[in-house]
Image (cartoon, rainbow over all chains, first blue to last red; front, top):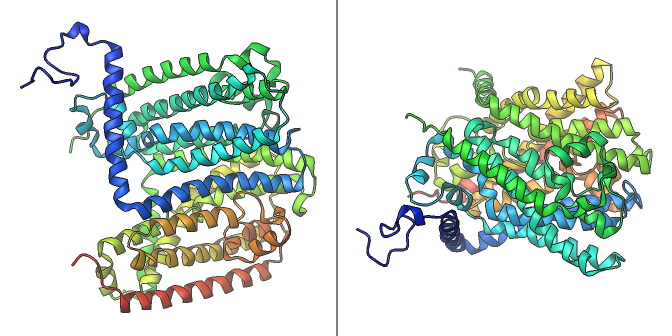
Amino acid sequence: MASPTTTGPYDSSTPDHLYTPYRRLREGLRAYRMIAAMWIRSTMAYRLSFAMTTFGNFAGTVLDFVAIMLMFSQVDRLGGYTLPEVAFLYGLTSTAFGLVDLAVGSMERLGRRVRDGTLDTLLVRPVPVLAQVAADRFALRRLGRVTQGLLVLGYAVAVLDIAWTPLKVLMVPVMLLSGGLIFGAVFVAGGAFQFVAQDASEVQNAFTYGGTTLTQYPPTVFAKELVRGVTFVLPLAFVNWLPALYVLERPYPLDLPGWTAFASPLVAAGCCALAGLAWRAGLRTYRSTGS
Amino acid sequence: MGTGRLYAAVAAGGFRRYATYRAATAAGVFTNTVFGLILAYTYIALWNEKPQLGGYDQAQALTYVWIGQALLIVMSVMGGGFEDELIERIRTGDIAVDLYRPVDLQLWWLSGDLGRAAFQLLGRGVAPLAFGALVFELALPGDPFTWLLFLVAVLLGLVVGFAIRFLVALCAFWLLDGMGAAQLAGLCGIFFSGMLLPLNVFPGALGEVARALPWSSLLQRPADVLLGQADPLGTFAFQGAWAAALLAAGRLLQAAATRRVVVQGG
């Protein structure tokens, strides 16, 4: 029985035509916040374990960068780029990826829920499934990666001799945001793929973790076909390469025109729209396990 | 059933268990191949800048990349082999059942893990290496004897890797939640096996320390045997010594754990 003060999405006092996409988004975010808060409370019951796993998350990504520093202990340039320049690329993609991994990284567990049928529980709740899946087992320890990314980015900005203009300064948050959205779209599309693939969830890692590893290095390192692929097919080049090369005043790969450096937010919006469609299509194919 | 046949059956079980998940195996091969591609291009850039870095030419460096991707899962460099299960059994108290069985705990898990590794060598190792050999110019030996020596080094590396993870898993007797220890061991494995960068590229003392640690048995040393960069007998002696020492340490720790620790679960 719904009381007049109920604010749930299926509040009987709301006529269907008032149930707008905007409201649906707001309800989804509210549910996401509540589920995430629940998991944070549950994590904090084991504080030492939380501290250790967060440190582990941090240390794991630090080693990643230590490997790059070891490379630069042997050479001065990699693909024509210096260590601070590579650190700039690294810090941007790591932070953007870390934020999204924190927000929706649990999507990679979806395949398991499809396999054992526990997704059913999420379907009967009056909350968008995407919000539930993304917040499932929300892992605050993933702040470790974000912290490490920000530290490397801070180091790069401090050491690099960039002629900062207001536009260049603005590019940094724009990159983090649109880069995060592009990775987020990859996570959601990967989740949609898991409805079909189930056991093959590891394929997703090639595009998420693989994507952030790829964009840690300058595009000059990679073969033209690969750069073309991550520009036009899976547009990871817009996460950090093109906008960062504008900031660093470096030539763009594939002789791309100058305006492409500013196209990241648009590309991110496009990716999110496509991922949303893929998610809906994936969710529709779901058939519960019959046992 | 004879003791040898018992452990062979456990190993066969480990093999079959992992062989069941074909889609997961294919997905893993795909992911290893993508990472191999990314790493290969960074190594090309590195060796273009400094040819003969670490005593490798470019073809050898690329071979190293693809051997690394082939062995990453086989060696459980990042963890994720049997130890998660053993930790869970210690946490829940099921380990008490295992200790009652008339089999040796360490040999039981070693057999299962070798069975798993045998499947993953075939299922997840061969394909990325073959892809690498098709796309890049690799320095793979044509001599079957060198491949045989490589396989011996892989087997010894597996035993070293198992012995380390067995020790880590036993820590759960004292820590109760062994995941922190497993994570730390995984980080050491990634870094000191040479998975991030060949250990002979590590500068100065760091390189010397890294090459002396047991984790070098997992990737650096088998790779050097295949690339003809290391004396096979010296490599086997190094790996064998670490394997014996770590397995013995595992037995001591197991004895201490079963004497002192009260099993959980009431």
